[in-house]
Length: 464
Image (cartoon, one colour):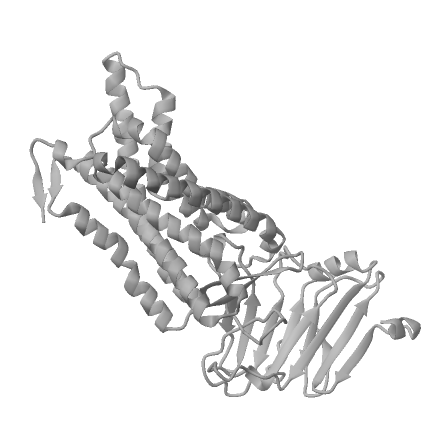
């Protein structure tokens, strides 16, 4: 850069063995606009962004003017961009993959680039492209380990693919779609991770207290609703435990341990969803249907709650989709976790699974809230008013029991992206604490208005 300034040059080619590149500096008087670069066998070139994509070049990138403006802010009015191409990159022989064209590209702008409205687009071309191509990223540190997590791959034609990569924040990564542009979340990683850690730690403590109180003090007096709640406590405790230990295990770079902790976290999350469903089903049977009994009821729902997730996680682990994920913060500190790396599997297994649970629990929630309001009107007619505070606590209790707070993930788009992440992270990391309050203080208020045990029904319809 010093030599370029002395000789008043804006571009300089870089050659270092198998590495070639281009250092491009746009001074403060240069018009800010989208910048495009392409690669031929011997050099990196500045390309006209208005021209059609040349399918004969192996690589092409479009840098939006917004990114250049951010670079100017941190480089005294100059937009600095360095593009490097690395040839003959080695690969881990234990992994069955091939690097397209045997080339890896790196881009830096000497600035923290985040919260971009327009994405940075990259195109890779190879004649007669063979195999299933997938865009991957590497943090540039440690072992050459690639991850497809947060990278969207679009096939333009039989020879060209387009890459749009992004990363997710730490706790919301459990539910948020990996295909959306989440560059703006990088600057919030530290805050969200802090909220997650504090919330999950507090939840684990109070879940432990709740389980202790139940098994050592109140087990003999528990009804079916309480037993269901205790199973939910166990599932949430495992989820929080696996989440809090995930990053530490990922940092060990032990692949077997990484697969195990990802599997445990995924299993406990799906089990938690199952117990949301079971809680809604239980309330539907005893509050809406009423006069219903089910033979071996607790045994059946216990098997359903804990066994259904097992074949799902076995299928995912057999596909080899539990891997390390890199989560980037604007501070430059990367966080690692072990999770699912395939966006399609994430959509189907996690979002799809919860969507089914959400539809059922929401339907039951609406029916029970309607019944609560009707019961209040009846009591008012009898001269015994049900206070608004008590009614509100009933509704909030159901909202927590049915896991409806997880639905915030469905609003992680557009202007709601960052707010929804903070809401999602706070509500769900502290969910164990809120449920403990329900167990210890609120449960009697809600249950006291309705019978939640089949034994209280004088006449029953048996469901086998």
